[in-house]
Image (cartoon, rainbow, N blue to C red):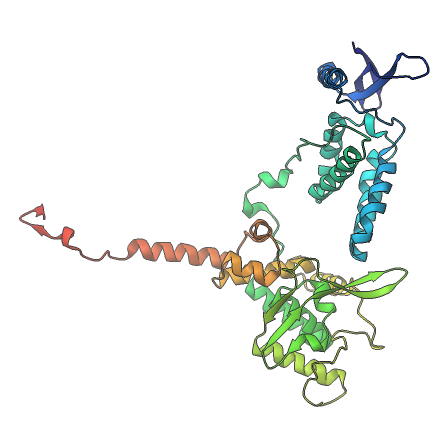
Length: 398
């Protein structure tokens, strides 16, 4: 029979319970164990009842009470990281180091409760926007712990991510992370007048293709087909401190895509190639693997470069503030305004899941909203066609 005890922590009062689990072969007696961290006595009682049931029916797994979350994370990472791309390895390490290990790292796996997991989720939701991602990674560690018989239940299961205050506001109150058509024209005009041509082409491609900045900066001349008027997006630029720049394959099959290009964009690309070759050159060679965007010495442009230039222009000219990712959002918004379907935008942007397109790009420009209202008004004001049932004779309908 479990016994319960209340104790104090820096986060307030908590409950623990003590129970007898496996038999000690030296003494022949059951070993006493403790599980703590419950916010209420009721929570502790429910967990204890489940533990005693498992002991009674023989499904209880003796747990190593010394293994911490960080130890399990290191095991999980060593097992799965060989399948990660360098960029994924760097991102995963950063997420755990910055967010999850400070909150879970030194706690023994068996002592982590559902209540504590919910507290962590609530706290992180107030500070970071990638809370879904954090919960997903923490969940993987707990599931790995179950697989390795370190714990029997996943305490993160059922944790709820609270909505932010912004999610309760009307759309009109949210800060838009995209530009409308007149803002794009002003921005490109500024870049064309005040910056190098390669900067103008870089931003033009980001806006006119909706490509990610890593995809644009990784472009090589062999990716451009001037005859078919297409660009192949199949890789992304990545930089690792010890290894320098490298081109990584796109994360998903949907990300590897071929986009059509308009004549204006093709003309700009031809101008850039002539500029790069110090004058007119022979027709494009399909095996020309030189980067389109480079520094003076031919090395790749750093990934923060587009961000720095965009922020500089926005600040100097008092433009509506958006991010480089907002240029991708801008492309999607204009596609919607032009009448493109969700499916067409999904394929253009390289989203593997259509939900991603619907969730991120539900906002269209004001012009598109006005067009919708205009279409509805015209439909309501239009005269319906006369049919046989509409003919009236002597005041009665036939």
